[in-house]
Length: 381
Ligand SMILES: Nc1ncnc2c1ncn2[C@@H]1O[C@H](COP(=O)(O)OP(=O)(O)OP(=O)(O)O)[C@@H](O)[C@H]1O
Ligand SMILES: [Mg+2]
Image: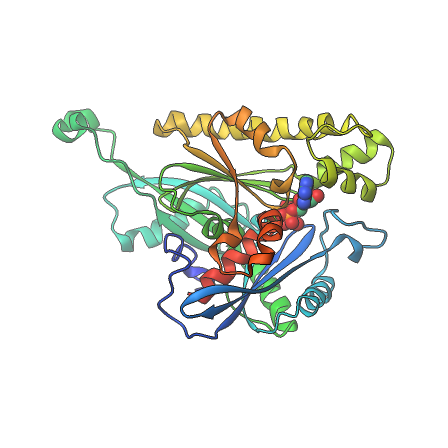
């Protein structure tokens, strides 16, 4: 197993702003290479607390011939290196002590149900064998990590009457994360070409959970609205209970606006950010176009929730929206209408100290930086 991702689950439940390890004056930088933009956040430790040093983002669209801001890209490593160097320079991030995110498309996250009697050492051999069914590439091309999900107590009847469960072996649920070794090598190489020393590579959803969660213990749905994909994580007690990717994101909305109004992609992206779902007199159809995509995303999310509810007899108590798309004007109201529960927009920067005059800006741009910030927080611990 690759050491750098071994501790992927390690610090999810710890309080991010309470540091005991490390030295005052430590600087770290978290790097999130998204499909439309690279985001970096640099933190510094002061009196045992995490302070925001600097942050920045760079659009990757313009690194493609004829590409636009907001567009989804699939760039070769040398272009990513170029862009990452640029954003580090522009944001004046000076630390080379860093951590990088692995995007969900380079990984698989799935659940296994295994006999509860298995010991820890038996699990080490059983998990890879069982995982083969779910992984479409040879097992030696991925690094596996797994986590035993806390099970609910057996009911009184089950506990007192062995006949109820006889023939039906007691199981435990395991969450498995498989990351392509190629992806880790690629990001390791990008990192060193930018003079960064990345000590770990973490699946993006875990970074995002770290920075978006405050004290939520009951079941929460975290929705990361990216440019290319929407990522759904069901989280309880800081642990991912289920995960699902939807192949639809902010760039699809911009694309539809651009086609429907016959305007360039760049203009459509501008309109989307300016008006979002709010009524606007100049381009009345924009909210409806965006809603078509949101309807799709929310109906997929509802299906995921329904399946979870059937299996575990548990409903969510809250939805947290994150990723650049979470900054969409009017989104929280629409989401509330769909989920019929508390909905909040993530405030990742509230986990770190920052100058008061930045407060408003950090609140507005926060969701975009959740992954980069979560990485830096873990690195600083
Ligand atoms: N104020 C806003 N209103 C609406 N959409 C916004 C706003 N700000 C950013 N976005 C959208 O958020 C998306 C970018 O978000 P983010 O940076 O999280 O994506 P990414 O990490 O590059 O993509 P992915 O996670 O899918 O790889 C873009 O589609 C962008 O248009
Ligand atoms: Mg992203």
